[in-house]
Length: 509
Figure 1 (cartoon, rainbow, N blue to C red):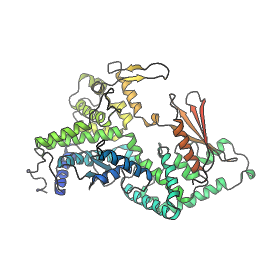
Figure 2 (tube, rainbow, N blue to C red; figure 1 turned 60 degrees about the horizontal axis):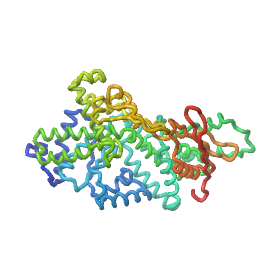
Figure 3 (cartoon, rainbow, N blue to C red; figure 1 turned 135 degrees about the horizontal axis):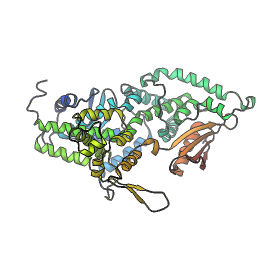
Figure 4 (tube, helix red, strand yellow; figure 1 turned 90 degrees about the horizontal axis):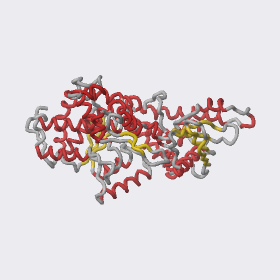
């Protein structure tokens, strides 16, 4: 251990590395992260991969042992072409929310870049995954890798038994509905490690349920009221894949299991979709502080520090709204800016900070403030709670109102009157509940043609894209096996604004 932490360890600009060097970097960073910063970490498993393997990894939505699907190959081909032609760069790393925490780094990185990546992923993301309340509630970090192995093997067996085309049709439909395959409120939590053991029992129970619901011909059964149908089917239901897995009358057991696999993967990514700004902001701030500590300790020379600052500055660059490269808010830039600002408020607050954040201003414990925020918030609530006038001014934020009829109106700017409005408008921008369609299954024609009825609650006039709605509804009808109808309903007036319907393509499933 003394050799690993020896004082002659020094990172130089563009320096090549060995696996022993990576081990020394990790051991040099760990006491700072755990001791000084108070980070709570999963054990780390570091994997060095090639550029092609990195392309393959994030083309397969960033999970190892992913099952095969044509969409992953399509994305791989596109990303590879852009990379080879110099139009896009590769990710420096991919980190998996698992226990142990899996960190994939590229073999082409210099020792300085490997150090930055380890600081960013193995310490920053790792702490966030382990301690954020959403991840603790929704994900089973110790079971995701074994579950993905089970899922990959299960789908491969299905391809052997039922044909690749049949499996691909189910996956196409499930992927089309993937964002509507998550629970926003907790159900009874079952460990992913128990999934394979419970498969046979689940199939038998679902078959009994389906025979109860669909086995009696409607002409021998008294007509059912809407309330009774909703009780039988557990409606309304926002998790469309869950409903289909449990209640679709024509799906075979293996098809239901595939829906369950896709649904579990969607649920695994649900916390990540709600915390991208916080997660990247946490990791970026942690790597910035760790690398600066190494420099202060003399473990990074001036040339390597310039290499680090160049890479770091590129990550947190925020083009202006009128810049050709502008594509919205850079979550790395805003996340890092807010984390750095919170640390400043905790140590050297202004009178303005004390007025806005009386509970944390001048607390003298910046890492305690940050750890509390990382543990208990998602992007939307984090912005509502902690976006300061200082950050608003720094990013020169402003809000534009568009009523769809007249010219754009500047609703708020970065001044005393606009701070609160900007805080809430930006939080709304990161709120999945506001920005994803609220679609629920509301009724089933149990006595007639077995049509499935859905409802989209239209908020602030934001209706579905017609083409995408029709395509998704077609996949839904294929899985349900009968007609499906969707009504778009104004959330305030309850007026039906538009209707869609689709029938199953019988040859599809």
